[in-house]
Image (cartoon, rainbow, N blue to C red):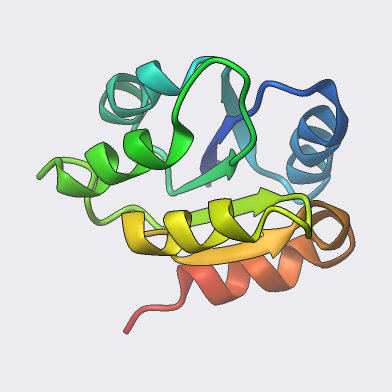
Length: 124
């Protein structure tokens, strides 16, 4: 059986690379994206099972790109787990409005990633 693919968007090395390593430990194949503006294109090309994004970026409006992903007919079905600093409540609210499945803190994502994946991947 093929390992599921996770698409991970991050700019900051920590915790981004730690999330990638944790996904590998959980038997996911991982494709990384460093520019939010490439999120939709990469999701269309790679066909991930789940998308994990760091909301904090110095270059791009990540929430706007999440909204584009959710508005695209080929990618709107993808569950998205977003993470950010606990103090970034504005980003967390914007992410929920953009269509994120689950928003978590950057400290919690590593400890509870298996549970977050299970929750995000549950079929309604």
